[in-house]
Image (cartoon, rainbow, N blue to C red; front, top):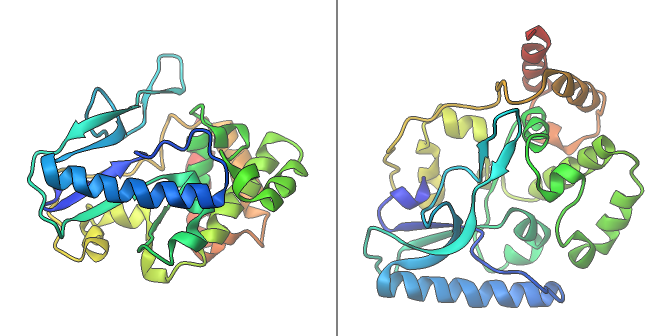
Length: 257
């Protein structure tokens, strides 16, 4: 959505973090790569992204027959259909690593988080094969050993995922309120709320529809997830969502047959 706007480029997981050595190593890589991306975009409108068939995609996964979703992205160089001026805006997304480094990154860069109804998040995690769906965060042990030890004390996949969900929301709670975007508001404004972070008007190219109520998410799991969330009064998700919003989504799946 950001990449469809004039003088804006949005890159999805373009930085290779393989063989990461330390927190400082990660920060140095980020600084180096962001400078490199800006140069290549200004020079010939190219940059690496994790995309689908050499193109930026709106989804990492596609639905498989029989349920679940398979990953359809790989890192490659893409060409943007515009000429970038030196003051163009560059947005880069790396969910896990940027979250783990958020405290440091905020010193040098404007940082934004996109959150979603926590019950829908748990449902989404259950349909894909990524670290968080297995109760893990890539590089957590390296970048936050204390957080890794706390995770290892949790027993069972759901307890681990609830811990990770709380872990993410707790970190995002340190951001100023206007730097946290809600998925539901993004859908409700058809993307126009992105104008706030771009600091320029947003011109919608497509109509958006929310996926929180999806037949892709198994009803029995959604009820189990909802009951666990709603019984946790101290979860950091309540700083971003009212209980009634989670309860409403829970009731939707409760009514499904």
